[in-house]
Length: 527
Image 1 (cartoon, helix red, strand yellow):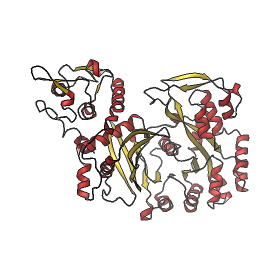
Image 2 (image 1 turned 180 degrees about the vertical axis):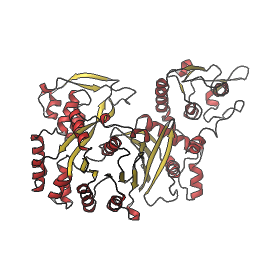
Image 3 (image 1 turned 60 degrees about the vertical axis):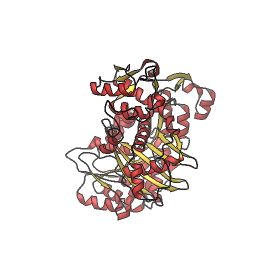
Image 4 (image 1 turned 30 degrees about the vertical axis):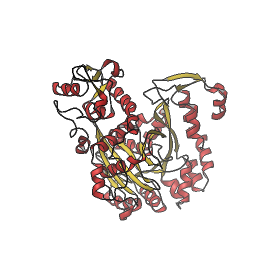
């Protein structure tokens, strides 16, 4: 991967003494002739090419007032050779100032966003459509401008802490959208002529068939940014206007999340930690796609992982690699389904099993059987709330007495956007908000709301916090399940026994200033 990244930098930077125009964009437009004929470079002429090719790889950011001051900010003073190269390309009067790492990173984000519109105006001849030859496509995808463009789009997405990047071709444009804190936002709109080059570049990085445009493809990209190692799951899908490409960003450093960092209320956290230390039984994590189920499971496995236990997982896909744990990648195309993988791993003498998702009767049956025969089993289901997991298992054909005998607990969860701490302002709860929340206006005195700043991309939100609902199996609930009771009866019984619902947890986090009424309504209205 390092070779891929370096192609956009090392191959194009020209040593000091080279002719003008060595860095793309440093042309006549950025220089003017003095009376003596010597060229005077304009420090305000910052271009995407200069920034992305010369400054960014070296960890150097122009000051926000660069056009007036000519200052470049860096964590440590660059070498004499690098300073000379930069001054040759930009201006002899360029100043280098040492700044804090956070300031440099903030300026990097600022300039990546500021210079992005330059992409729209490119008339780069390489960005064209209609390549029928695979070799020509590969050559196109390996050109430095393409590499630099894709790397820039990756950097923009990472600046926003995006979880997914969507490359969506339309009739006239290629839209690049990111999912940030669960919400889609467009970061670029590029000319459609760029699409072929960008799609080919992404497929080349993911080791996919560049020439195949009729069938969906899946792949993976290893991408290093600074000290961060990212895994990107790549999915292509043929469309009317070209291939749609979606990248799921998986940060390996994000695996170091503890249960305490997830945002569970103290009481729920204490109860959950007690449950996961049981010798056998089944624990289910439920919620819609993107609700943090996998993160909770990984944090759970990290908590209980020890040399005294053998832990095996079967996942589709394996999102993060965990030390000391045997992880199996399910692959239905070769016959390795969840059920087949689970059937095999129970013969590996495990103590703890983790199944990525229970999708069918066979998987559910084997998981429950394993829980009843001395294994601790963790898995996920897609349901609206905790009680709904019981109904879902019954719909799969699992008998009620088996469910009641094997289950230890069911935890439902959601994610709400967290108010940006840098621009948060205190407001009173108004009548309309109280009506939407279906609460008494006097029950919550004040709320916090982000006004929008550079750190949060003017959204007022930065990051997410979990909402949790933990249904613990008691004798009364087991009796209801064995008798075939529906989800409403099970939920009511759990509430009588002290279960805090997702809506109640959301209102508490609203009262604590963590989120907003809009987020509470958006996430919990279907519950």
